[in-house]
Each structure stands twice: as structure tokens, then as C-alpha cells.
Amino acid sequence: MTKETMLNSKNLAEISRQLPTPSYQRDTLKSGIVHVGVGGFHRAHQAYYNHLLQEKENASEWGICGIGLRKGDQKIHDVLQQQDGMYTLIIKHPDGKIDSEVIGAIIDFKLGFDTPNVLIDQMAQPDTKIVSLTITEGGYNFNPATGEFDFENKDVQHELANPEEPKTIYGFLTAAIRKRKENGLPAFTVMSCDNIQHNGDVAKEMLLTFANKQDEELASYIEKEVSFPNSMVDRITPVTTQADIDYLKQTYNLKDEWPVTCEPFIQWVIEDNFSNGRPAFEKVGVQFVPDVKPYEKMKLRLLNAGHSVLGILGALHGHPTINACMEDDLFVTYLRAFMDKEATPVLDKLEGIDLTTYKDSLQERFANPNIKDSVSRICSESSAKLPKFLIATIQDNLAKGGSIKYATLVIAAWCYYSDKGVNKDGESIEIIDAMQDQLHQAASKTNEDPLAFIKQESLFGNLAENTTFSSLYSEMVQKIYADPDIKKLMK
Image 1 (cartoon, rainbow, N blue to C red):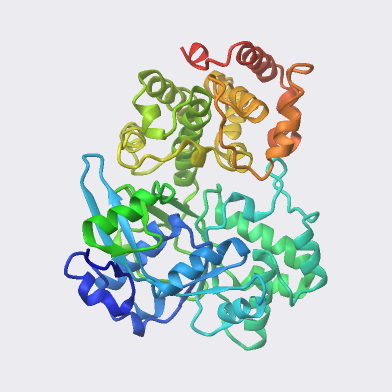
Image 2: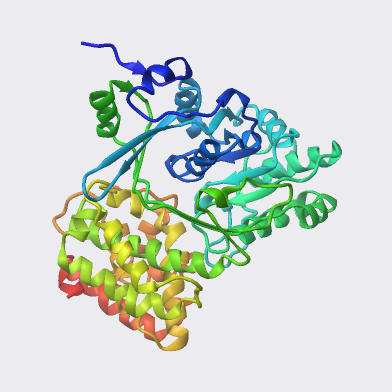
């Protein structure tokens, strides 16, 4: 049997006989972008756009240095170090076609949970012009109901007392900006690429709130000098499976320890607001706009909320993947009714977007049989997602007298899911959520108080006090507890 070819710089010439590999000189790239949170999405999206730009023209000042703040980043760090920052992107089309390509935009990866100075120095070095983020909703450290910064976080308390020993993104950013200021270097741009409405505004508000507590003079400097463009990002990127790793071995004899799979669709809309220059991403399809808010709201309320509708209801029914949900006519009908009757009526005016076409494309993407995005991934960290994706739609519809029945059933299903942790057939559901214990505790009181779950103000605000919502929710949750066959309520 032929020995597998390890993905690294030394073997690129051999690999390029079978797969597209970087044509640009990777050793000439400078790390103009420092990226926090190098997961599958970053590698399928921002790093891919960067790779496309490097292929198109000399953009050597815009290479990417990945950094990890947590011990959990050790594995991806070790894999990328072993592979010289490279990985294979596997694009799976609905018709079964698969395109694979080696991506080379990430040129370094550094960890900082034990040595924070390494990361501070990387952010503070002259080449760094952008610090970009995919740290998930939970990484922004705000209360989902109030939007206020959480100063109770022990890591935040530690770094407020010890500015040279940061632990959260805010501690690292303030330390790096302080060092740049002291060294007479211009401020970098903080570029959020997370699924949070007004992500740049949120990053700015949270950082300024933190910095004001730590160093008021520096906070004033940040407000004046640092840019925080809002952006809308989109590409479905399921968790890499062993089957994906095996596919590369069997098809190309290539050993890639952590490839990334994704759908063909990709979108990035971002405000053209940068402190210290930016890559010419418009040359590879990125849309720069004056105000991204209507576009990000469309994506969050349709794609992300649509995913959660399928995910929560699908988990309760027993569908393992999103495409399995879309093979079920009742789920397709329910999803479209939610998008048409509840999400669309509360969107803002959108220039250049045909919403019917966009919703059709979402259904096609969700149904892609080759993506097989797991329901458990889509449901992960629902406590951080649903307030922005789904609960906000309920609140908007309550304010204008619109329909809430489709979204409310999802919330009632989420309660049962959080309480019982099993589907309608009693099979265990994998729940991944930082608030899992709190969610379970609240949901477990439903039999004695049908509104117990929605009385969690950090998630639901004062929705429990809204009689229109609470009466409908109470009716639905009691029906689910009596018979968890969710399809009976979806009809």
C-alpha cells in the first residue's frame, strides 16, 4: 500500500499533481490579519476569501496569523503547525459533486492561555492591521436579555486586576492596543465575523465598557482610533468527520488531520470602515456597503433562525441532520411558513435582495444531502443563539400584532428538550450548551409551573408577562409534555 502523503509545504509539489494548491509564495506573506477563533467556519470563509485574493493578486501584507486564547485551541494549533498552516477545503455540492482545494492563507498559529505576552506581541507588532474574530456569541460576554457586559465573569475580574495577564478577548485587545499606542503604531481594526446582529457595534460597546473599567484614557483612545465594521457572513460549515478525513486519504492518498467541509454558497457583506487599511476583498466577491444591518438581520432571522427551527424540532422528532429534516415534507412546510409569516414581515428594507429567491436558496442549501449538518451542532449553544435569532422575532411580532405560533412552538420544544434530554422515542439527545444546567433546572419545573422555563429573564426578558405569548406557550408546552410527538403540533 502506498504511503500517505502528509499535507505540508515540503509535499506541495507532489500534492499539486492531484489537487489545486496555493500558487502564491506563502513564505513571503506577512500576518496583516490576526484571527481569534480558528474553527471550521473561519477556514471555510474568511481564510478562503483571503486565499482567493492571494491567488488573484499580490496581497502579501494580508496573510493570517491564527491565535488561540483557550486550552481547547491546542488541537487545531498542533494540527496546523504540523501542516504548515495549510488544510484542505472540501466543497460539497447538492448534486454530489465534490471540489477539494488546499488553502494556504494561514501562515502561523500561536497559543496564549499560558503565555499571554506572545499574543499581545503578535497583535501589537507593526504588520498587524486587523484583528478579526469568530469567537461565537458566548465569547462576547454580554447578558443576552439586557445586552450589558458581564462583569461577574471571573476571567474578567482577574484581568481587570491584572492587565498584563489577560484571559478574555477584551483583556488581550486592550493590552495590545495599549502597547501599540505606547510604541506609536496606528490602531488596528477589530473585525467581528460572528453571527451576532450588529456584531461590530457589539464588539465596540463591550470592549469600551471593559476598557473604561480598566483604563479610561485608553478607552477614549479606542473610541477615537479603532474601527469596528459590522459584517454579515454566511457559509454552512458542518463539523469535520472521520469520513471527510478518510475521503481525502482514499481519493488523493492525502493525509490531512483536520480538513474543512462546506457548501458551495458563500457570502460576506461588510461595512467599509477600517482604521489601518484592508485587503481588496471586493475583487473576490465580498460586498462592501455603508450599512450592513438590514443584511445581517435578514440572515440571522431567516437562515440562523431557520436552522434553529429545524434543529430544535428535528431533535425532538429524532432527525439526525438538517438535510434529513428537509426530506420530511412537514418540516419543509413548517420552515417556509415560519420564514414567510413570522420572519419576513419584521425585516428591514433590503436593497438588491429578492427575499423569495433568498428563501428558496435557503431551502436548497438546508436540503443539500452531502453536507449532513448535524442537528446537535445546530442546536449547540442555543441559549446564546435563540435570543438574537428567534426570540427577537417573537418580540417584534408581538409589538406589531403579527403571528408568533411557529416560533413559540420551537421555544416550547426547547423547554422539553432542555428538561428531558430525549426525543419522542426516548432516545438521548446530545445537548451542548454553556447554560445546560440552568436550562434544565428551569425546564424541570414546568409541570408545577408551565411558565417556569420562560421566566429566565436573561434569555426571555419579560416575555412571561406578555399574556399573548405566555398563554400560547403554556398551551403548547403542556401538549408537548403530554405527548412529545412534535409532528402532531406542527400540522
